[in-house]
Image (tube, rainbow over the protein chains, first blue to last red):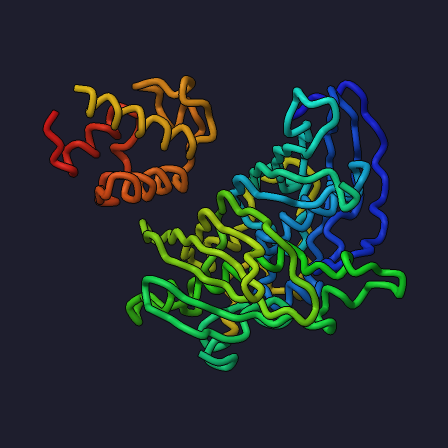
Length: 149
Length: 181
Length: 84
């Protein structure tokens, strides 16, 4: 667990203005730290979502790739410039998210090249937890600094 | 392999069945699949009139899913009939390494996935490959891992909830092995 | 001897990469599960990487034996028939 020294408020996610299979962040909390951020994003798995009707019929499971979607939307909303995914260095799914679960994805975001005067990208380490505390996913990813970069 | 044949093999359904056609297949070794992207994809439904061309970039999450489903088709094609997916088993995406975004796909593009099966160990498959739009590589996949798991095990409720209650509406079949197919 | 050292260090790199730690953090006898929080998928991944890098197939029945770097190297050596 990342012990945040400041506890910023949760804020609701803004509607997604670009292509996305679903709104994958309900609310998020952003705490700046050491040239980067700690972002916490929460999303409830809606068993009535059309996506889950197809994944899988009769057994709604939040697809692993939607954790990537949550990651991308959280980064776009929390980090200035709306960074875009460049690479998923590593991701692993450790437990399923079912309809009715809520996932909390905590992301530690740091400059990809700590020595540079301005960041050329962001290195992200994340852990997803279900509301019972079970770790559902761990990931490492790289983002650019945004569409304007 | 056409859409009907793909549908018979993969458990995913609309809007998350993301392979349109298999163009070549060497069971247990390599598969090439196609996913056509149109502006009527559900992922574009919410875009406003002010959306930019870049806003139409097909989501990385869905591209990975489409690649993963191609890998599943490859794996299943090389499995003994007794190892095919049944009502009791699911193929789950368990992890990936070094997935690199090299470009984007937009409405009108036809994405072609080339997937090679590297190894199957303990019911876990390792696949590698690339995704293309024409001659343009839009993603390279170092390693994608999928595992065959019993449906019942996947849907097991978490032991001893400590936080907020996990509420599953009574009229859904999220828990237990609902056999639909 | 140098061939052995080279392969041992190559194996250290492969395993460290799977466990997402630095190579100098991976000790010869550090238990993958207890010291580096490896789950069963990581063990399977190590086995698959060894197959790819050394063209050595370790049967999955030996997965439980691959608990640390030293034991893993011994298993690879045994199945590869290396004589150093």
